[in-house]
Image (cartoon, rainbow, N blue to C red; front, side, top):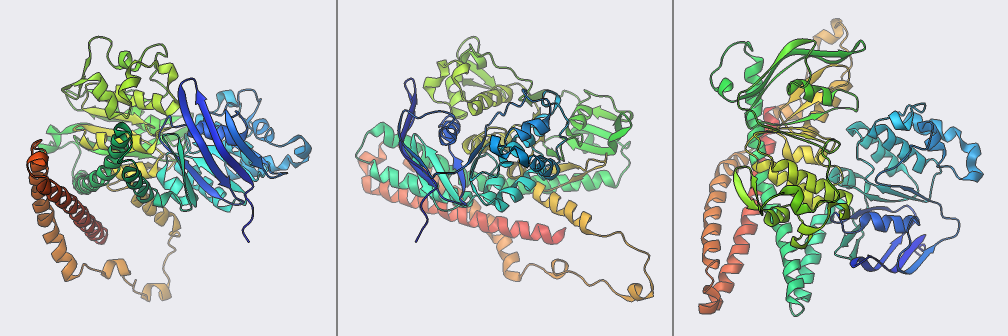
Amino acid sequence: MAEAPIYTLKNIHLAFGDNQLFENVELYINKGDKICLVGRNGSGKSTLLKVIAGVIEADGGEIFIQPGIKIAYMPQEPDLSEYASLKDAILSGLPKDEKDNGYMADIWLDRLKINGKSNPKESSGGECRKAALAKALISEPDILLLDEPTNHLDIATIETLEEIINEFRGAVVVISHDRMFLNHVSKSTFWLDRGNMHLSNKGFAFFEEWQEQIINQEIIAQNNLNKKIAEETEWLHKGVTARRRRNMGRLRRLIELRKERREQIKAVGNINLNIDEGDFRSKLVIEAKNICKAYNGRDIIKDFSTRIIRGNKIGIVGPNGAGKTTLIKLLTKRLVPDSGFVRIGKNLQEAYFDQNRITLDPKKTLWQTLCDKGDHIMVQGHWRHVVAYLKDFLFKPAQAHTPVAALSGGEKNRLMLAYSLAQASNFLVLDEPTNDLDMDTLDLLQEVLDEYAGTILIVSHDRDFLDRVVSSVIYLKGDGTAFEHAGSYTECLEKVKGQASVPNKAKPNNKTSAKVEQPTAKQTKKLSYNQKRLLEVLPKEIETLDKEIVELTTELSNPELYQQNPSRFDEASQLLELKQQEKASKEEAWLELEILAEEMSV
């Protein structure tokens, strides 16, 4: 017999003024559940988490909590400024009757590598975030509520947090934009969509497929209802399915970019950087040779060289404090290296996105923020109506005249991105662009960066985002050394871990020197004849399908077709869907083979 839920919400509804955030929300939390709460920015996720935590009250509905259940909540923007030290902040998470358990603070200080003596007012965002996590965990709650816990954390700490959540015996409800993090920690999903709650007993890894099923069901159910609602649902559905098709195209282009970057790195590694190589020079964006930078006797960047060519999309990763921001400042000549040199190409127009630097006027409307005069804005060389541009960033037309102060945290970040990406540029520097962005906005940002014709430098701790966007990764180890890997962050991490696991080679003795190293399975494995054949044939088949899809789309775009020949309209619509599915399937097969061939060639 199943155990009763330890926490229950029934028929919960909440509105702020005329804005109905959600209604008739029902959810159950069972002992040991690992739940991700997802939904668009502004949909009410953080507010719902506050209702569960008891921080705010709903307008109506029932809440039942089993007696003795302990709840701990970490807000999206934890404020620890009232505490004298980070350790004091962590200790404040203990109930009054558990103050004797103060030793637990030392356990979490060690596990999360926190300097407990640091003053919160002088600590970095990452340090304060870790302390806020420890504050929520120290009381060993039955239900742990985490709102965007990975923001400002480096990748090593995010991986530690994944281990903590998976080991945690209580229930966890987490809001996060980090897909890979959610894939690793969630076992069920709560989807808050347009005021309604959908529940799944599967983790986030299955979300997109489940989301599409629900939207399909809604379209069928709403065929006879209000046309506007049906159109909105269908638009969302088209966004989900079209995004999948675009993802395949983006991945194909990304593989090509990574191949190109790998060849560029090989070329730089085999030549003297002082030699003029024609094509490299004409496309040069940044050239750095043997740059070094130290602070207080500590090497931040040591003997690093690279050459960045127009169109490269490069991620900069490493632990907090490893020197990522310093490296960007050196490469963009905001800082002068202690030794070595940096050269920047001609006619470089830089746009710099840093959430801590861009300030929005809360009194201005979204329209005024992007466009002080008139109703059009120049975006990457093209005039766009400000409302149409806002729609690109998932704002409704009615929000154009909304003051910035009324936006949620994620919506403000979305507006800051819209503002930054509208600036005339051929070189884009993005410092943690993904914080507080929902999945739809992340997909949109990936599309924008994919279509961006210039060069991009990205500092990010979002592993999935990096895997989908960058052509190469510069990895800073934290000891001053850095290297570049042409490929995804995941591949780079495997390389780093592989190097760390290899012990120092001792001088071989007679026994060991007689042994011949056996080739690994990866070294001996080759593509089969059929796989090689498919690798050649599939691109041609995809190209043919592309042409057929264009022809069918052109035919269906004729506004008179449905009236003159409804049966042909239906036939063409069904055929178009089949062709699109076939193309997606063939693209996926081709990409898998391409990735496999690439891995074997490494």
